[in-house]
Length: 85
Image 1: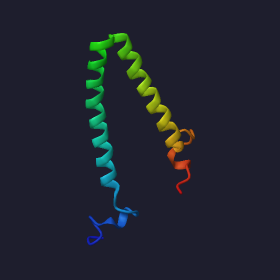
Image 2: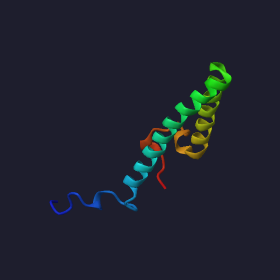
Image 3: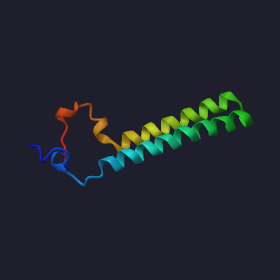
Image 4: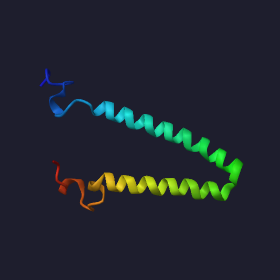
């Protein structure tokens, strides 16, 4: 067991899990920064109401894309009952 510790023997696949986590965290950070910048610009030009509607619409679009792109989250089944292909 000592020789297997720290190896990828316990995590089958491509070995790109950490890369994927880093990419997702990077995109989330960029999105958080840009949404504040966009909100400030929209407030300056169009007011608070337009900003609320615009960012709400962006969140709704993101939710729809996520739901369609990740069908396993919409199945309603707990992870232990979902099929892993």
